[in-house]
Length: 102
Image 1 (cartoon, one colour):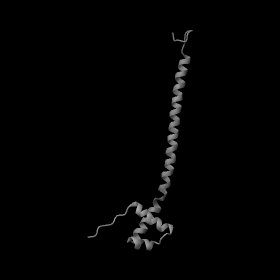
Image 2 (cartoon, one colour):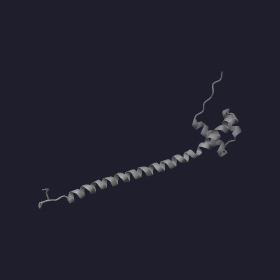
Image 3 (cartoon, helix red, strand yellow):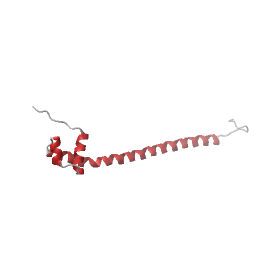
Image 4 (spheres, one colour):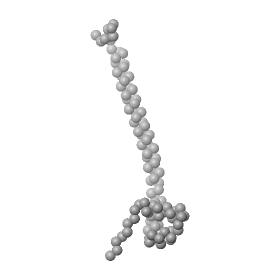
């Protein structure tokens, strides 16, 4: 009994990109790697269908960067607010003539 061959994702991508770029014909690649044309077509369809996900990840990273920037800004503003509250309470408290509290 023959065992099924397994192919890495890198191999599949390289083979499909060779076909899509026109570097080699599908028939030539199928002969060279002993692949069925149907298998190669399935790989092409999978690559084309999932190509949009590559760009979604990039947009997600831009969103993540923006989120991190906003979180840093919120942290900075919170710290400034706490400092302002402390300064306000110190300035509003009654003091005697030498600057100490009664």
